[in-house]
Amino acid sequence: MAVGTSSSMLGGALLLLLVLSSAIDVHGGSSSSAAPRSPLDELCIGLGGWYVTPDMCVSALCIDPSCRSARGLPELAVLATKLTVANATVAKTSIESALAHAKNVKARKVMRSCLQLYVGAVPRLQWAARSVAAGRYSGVPDVLEAAYRDVSQGCSSLAGEVALPKENNEFFMMAFVVHAVVDRVQRIIG
Image 1 (tube, rainbow, N blue to C red):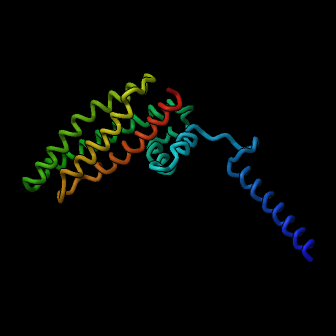
Image 2 (cartoon, helix red, strand yellow):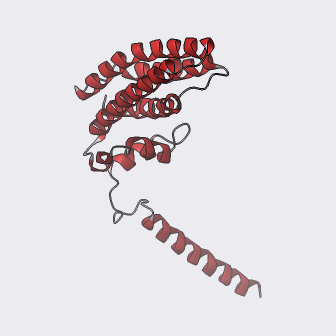
């Protein structure tokens, strides 16, 4: 009886091993027949998910459909920094509009302060985008980190009870993701 049980357990273990190895092949494991990943997939999966998940990465970058046709990591980094500049510009414009329509002194003060933060950030982000387009990454992650930490979170801290335009939060998410993207690309290609 013990021999029969042992054989059926061994057979079951072999079957399980076969199923698992097939699953690895299907999901892009170590099999040589697995389809190569796109640069977008490589980048977003490579971020790890400890603070930017692959879904967050794809969602942020694929606001521009060209994300899927990017030929490599540098092209994705260029796209990402351009999206951050565009997003900051939209947030700045929405804060200008909120300032123009603010009903009370506190709201005007908050919007004016936030606007100053964005006015200072946009040229720095433009510099970052030009630098990445030229293949120079030094200092760019610092600019991106300051953008989400000091500008977007700074506005949120100043606001208190005052409602900020949704574009401030959208800018935070974009800059947060793009910081991770550029930092990763810089580490990989130098």
